[in-house]
Amino acid sequence: MWLPRSRFADVAALATATLALGPDARSFYALGWAQSSTGQPRQALANYEQALHRYREAGDRVGEAATLNNIGLVYDGLGDRPRALDYYRQALPIRREVGERAGEAATLTNIGLVYDGLGDRQQALAYYQHALPLLREVGARGGEATTLNNIGAVYNGLGDRQQALAYYQQALPIRQEVGDRAGEANTLNNIGAVYYGLGDRQQALDYYRQALDILREVGDRVGEANTLNNIGTVYYGLGDRQQALDYYRQSLDIRREVGDRAGEANTHNNIGAVYYGLGDAQQALDYYRQALPIAREVGDRVGEATTLSSIGVLYDGLGDAQQALDYYRQALPIAREVGDRVGEATTLNSIGAVCYGLGDAQQALDYYQQTLPILPAGRRPRQRSHHQVQPRDDPPGGTESRRGSRRAGDRRRPRPPSRPPGP
Image 1 (spheres, rainbow, N blue to C red):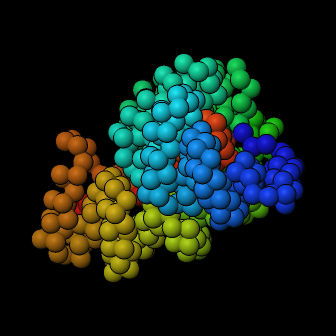
Image 2 (cartoon, rainbow, N blue to C red):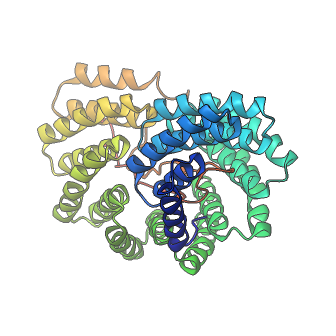
């Protein structure tokens, strides 16, 4: 969890005062930690590099490994995952060499998170499962809960919801036991996401509401906005669009307040989906058009593809086939780029349907046939349905990581409905 901001300021002030007396590895490290924890990644990197140089000069292998790990964390936060991975891989053998089991577990978890972010879930799972027994061995209950939660998120991403639920339900009582209220809310959110995926919307709603109460209690505005968004999606699934709209608007207000641009784009898209469902195409288009440039600004390629597809669906419904095709064709390569196979199949299906409507049966057949090998046998692409992305997992646990600082709950984004194929 985050420490009070004044604590970071105190650490930074003490480190700065100590450095005024002369270069010191620990003070550079402490200053880097305080800066990385308060949104100053570039300054943090500069101080960590100073600390690293001095730890190496002194032959302090423990300090060297801790600093390498934290430099990895900063690069991960900046979105430079390959560089983060490079630093974590430098830290890991040193931690093994010096027998620092808790640190080894933290770095294994961090590597798992990088692979998770890169979409390599099997690799992520392998690293999390290596970390778990180490965390149990050293009695790091908070880290154990975080890793159980992360394993659950991987299984959910792999479509094994029962396994995901089993891991989340192991994480939850540990988080309650150690008093990690923000972590408890995160896992409640993730359990809600699993139940939503299993079609049990009432159970999902119950878990989301438990999470919401805790997030408000601890003052986690980002988590509160995420959970309000999730509750809106449940109500959308239940057919209560006015309730969905109310929760999405509450979420949007908070996301604007805290500057969560990616979340703002997502909720704009969701509100657009509600208006589309209510038959108000112009309002829907307005919200989609607000979502699209923000998704591009923050580099949210999944969100960009979703919104492009949503706009395509809208124009399709208005009978503007050429505009629909243009947006679908913009969405398709992005879905392929990010490995969204279901989104790819849905968009191919939609393009095929538009081509069929335009009288080009051969083109339609070509797109439909491209859809078939993507989906498992017997499964059809989504048609006029909503889809949510997988839950966001927890940040790395362990000695140097900022546990809880990037905990975001889940972000559920409705998938635009696709046009049904022609007769």
